[in-house]
Image (cartoon, rainbow, N blue to C red; front, side):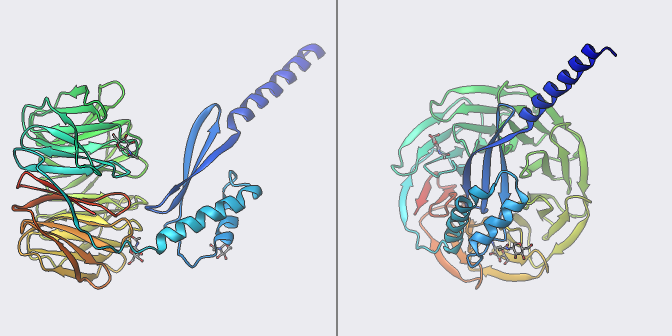
Length: 440
Ligand SMILES: *[C@@H]1O[C@H](CO)[C@@H](O)[C@H](O)[C@H]1NC(C)=O
Ligand SMILES: *[C@@H]1O[C@H](CO)[C@@H](O)[C@H](O)[C@H]1NC(C)=O
Ligand SMILES: *[C@@H]1O[C@H](CO)[C@@H](O)[C@H](O)[C@H]1NC(C)=O
């Protein structure tokens, strides 16, 4: 090699190294706080792109020393340099203040909205809780302002019941609706404009979800398939075929790379979102699946079934870890608290039950409803449970004592849907009586 060539080559290597180093260098832009579950999101720039990574602090206690936590994080996370430690310490303190709050409050009826001319199917908040959506048998979905109770938009176009609805949270600028007319529609939440109608299912759509990045919509149908659709282009991405029965529920994991589907064929399937391949099947229930969820760290799945039991599954192996018994009738709903240590279930036997995910023992039986309990969830703080029932009431329960703290009464027919907002300070109930109630 001539000397000239050698130098040129060395220069070339050096420039290449600098180029790659520049691409790899991460520059912290800002910190974002996430209260439920507690975490710090780092927004940083790398190779000209803005990226985020989250530091989960699920085990954070209000008594922990914030400075020492910040110091420990700085040891593990290169983006948190020495000079950032005081800032991180402040954020940890803020999270601790939030954790210290129990979410205790007495809810009162804030507004009754004569929302639809036929029964409601589902209700959902946007992340801040400033607006919400209602789906109905009247073939529409409506967007509402929570504070004023004003109707902001009517999303019209479906030719049959609008059953499944979702906001693209955390953004909240798009709404997806799934209908018995076999199509899914994507809407602009602010203008009511329909961006796309996703066609391809051959039976009713009964469940749907955005992935956490809000780039993909998954729809589950009575045609036994789940389809993934692109939010940007309106194209179908893949069809997840494998179930031999109707799809009744679906859920993305926290990273958005896996989706689970529950079916009337008694199984839950796990799918790789990128390839559309089935990666596992959870076999064991002896009745239809009613609902299924991942825990926050995506290591476990909890399932509720018409066989009167719930099961806990290891996501990695697909093995059933435990069967949670006690209900005397079909189980309709199930949920984890965000640390994944507790599970709540709702049943046709008119009770809800809280289980310890570790010991799989029943912690509390929530007794008081006079008819089927169809919906159940923890508040974001993990201190209370909200249940909705065919007895026309919703109830709030204390997780530690199992006592009913409040009965939300007034609906004149079954409650199909009840949800907390992100802060846990507003509740929405949707009923067969065509109304929706806001409780604050
Ligand atoms: C920080 O790390 C040390 C050493 O691993 C550990 O002993 C300590 O408990 C940690 N502090 C906190 C508050 O997490
Ligand atoms: C809630 O929804 C409204 C209207 O779609 C939107 O303007 C607002 O940014 C949303 N807030 C959040 C944080 O989701
Ligand atoms: C979840 O359950 C565990 C175990 O009972 C409890 O310690 C924790 O506070 C709960 N967490 C939240 C906030 O959901």
